[in-house]
Image (cartoon, rainbow, N blue to C red; front, side, top):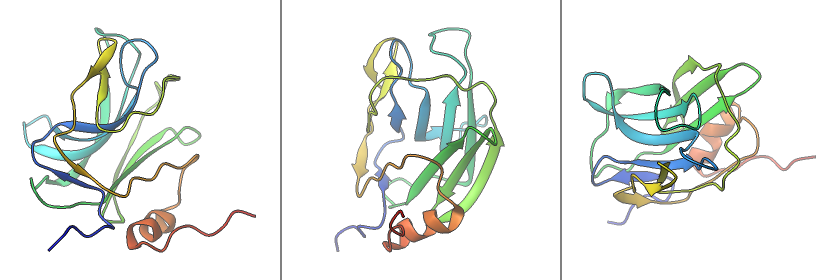
Length: 157
């Protein structure tokens, strides 16, 4: 049986994917499978504090449950600059949000399946990606659920 096309990612190995590339050194936004502080792989949305190789940190909103390699999961993340919040959704459901106030402008191109590391592409996604969507602006929770369900978004006026 083939993958359910409503799902977005299936990791074969746990590496990051869907970052916003930094113009010079580092990606600014990450939607990935990454190890939490206990070394447990979880889905996360994260942002780095600056475009530098050293002296920066990444703030992440982690999924409550570990990633299951080989299992399709719809993963969505956003940063609301007005509210200063990073938000993670899995399978159309709100999971977690964390405050993030150190946002910087990452003017490079959107990169899917790799990250900008030390000024070059790296941290390549090892798995499958399907049905990727990118939106300008922050979607409401019901809109994330609609995208996951394959309904789509209402037309803009």
